[in-house]
Length: 95
Image 1 (tube, rainbow, N blue to C red):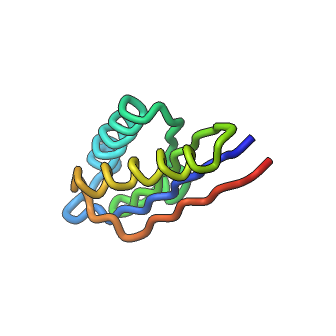
Image 2 (cartoon, rainbow, N blue to C red; image 1 turned 45 degrees about the vertical axis):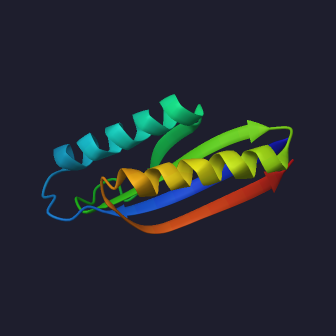
Image 3 (cartoon, rainbow, N blue to C red; image 1 turned 135 degrees about the vertical axis):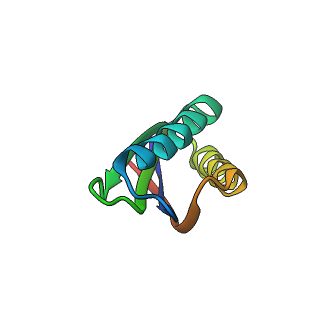
């Protein structure tokens, strides 16, 4: 079994409320879920108005498939351009 984790950190310029942050987070999470069938959650900095940290997770028996899927998800997030992506990381765990 292979577990893949995509960690994304965004800077939300001009955002001054958690409501605005939630709007951006929900949009990004829904697009990732619908397009790539991954589990997505906000994992850090929940009280920050200008920073959003999300993680997308998938499981598969094939490491190449996991890597490819998460790379496509990352490319989609970059193309969406809803917020400034300041950090990304793909971690593959062999279990």
